[in-house]
Length: 324
Ligand code: DP6
Image (cartoon, rainbow, N blue to C red):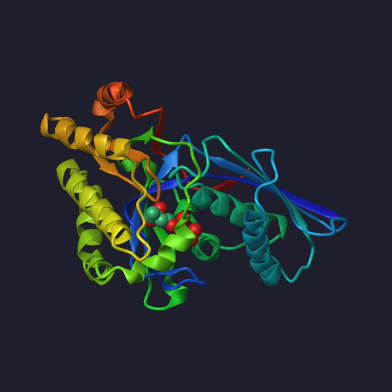
């Protein structure tokens, strides 16, 4: 056969306890464990076709050829799949997002989760979820969490082989809503891969990492008991700690815009007024506002009035990545 093709879909995820910094950058072996929510309603659909007639790998994202660095990163991931399958065939990869890329909605997570599933299926490999999560991690750390649906924990691992994600609770466990306040559509200047390499230059990173098991325990328990006030305070603390490390890295990393801080202030005020909502921010200016479903409508309306918010995306607990 000259062509073998498979298609997969995956959702991004929002980290409630963040991954920032690695013990080994090449292997994406993280400095600390993390917990996330898979974002249903947002998705990346990827088709991988191994084609013997192609001279080299090809990639389109949302119908366009992306920068060479993206093709290189995808080719390296295909090489990992080809090595396991014992093949050398070039591939055509077509990836479509239904949300804007590069604005702090982790598109690399859904991209590498979908690529891992479609690539291994097209190469006729059958890997179990743990193996898929470990493989996706090598493409993009946060992608190892997007293999699973609902609430997910990525174990840092005693050894690099123990570093993979596992489901903590299914999507129907708790119907939290993530309202993503889009502040900017501009591509970020420093991507997370580069950001991770700066984490250890901050004198705060060792403190952040040493305290991570405590935050993971609080977050896991709050999720399992559906305890919103506890979840809100640990999620905001963890996000603030990561951004404190970013601010104090050399060179300094500042992902926030003035409007980011406006939304953070608004969210804490609304919570004091009785709305169950909290904020968390990844490596970009956008603010993820996590809320209880019964308060989502009111939060959505209020976010709509804030001048710096140019768009709102809405996500709910989503399912696992799957071959379609
Ligand atoms: C701030 O997974 O995007 O979103 O492994 O280099 O692809 P790479 O990094 P990435 O880092 C995510 C950083 C974060 C926090 C998180 O998602 O845990």
